[in-house]
Length: 342
Image (cartoon, rainbow, N blue to C red):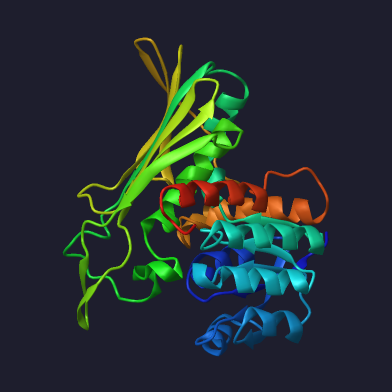
């Protein structure tokens, strides 16, 4: 079975989650890391053969089949385009771009490169999400009328210390709307199996004054985002991502006229799935990830490994469920509709 040589652009989430997912995966070998500041040290610590300052240098400086772009959002365009100019297969983190125009440019570059490309929406591969998608796809909840996706977190409350940096700078792609509402929009579109007809909403900054170990600073980004999406045929979705609450929870409910299915838990990675029919509520047993043992490294790792299964299939021209650049463009359009980018 062929193994693919892959390089990672970005030494944050790329090292915390993508690196262990790829290291444990049977189809990929991490041979390079790119970061403007920390690549040599990361390479030394993790036994990665090559280190570079940029994705462009990485694609030119070693033999690669594929690239994971896990750099900050403001670098996605440059990194993706560099990888595609070198005719590499690409996985890109979300949010895809800073604007619809950037997203369109990358979609067009994918067509020219004719390589396998996808977006890292790993939450599609959580077992309960997969089971919920199956219920929807098989018509068990028809006719669909309403979806509600609510993610509540606590890490942006007023008293929480968070280090200043690009994440608190709007022009560089920071904020919760890009970081987490993008996941919820993708999830709703995936469950609906179609693109939105219309999106309305807004984002909110409750805590503009922030603190870190260096003192106080001003946040230029949102700490919550809200969207209402119309899909046609009577289906709407209501989305909330808010990181200023005392509780941490996640709910994804799909309501039909006769039945409802609800995936809920303390986070999008820790869920139980329930079917509700009239007065009866039943918990549904879901098949665990084949990579469950890797959850000890990080909760994101098993669904990322499932995503890389689909990436390998797409590289080989096989049927696959990899979130696509075209789907990411649809998400980018919804983000723009509520004020993220343009």
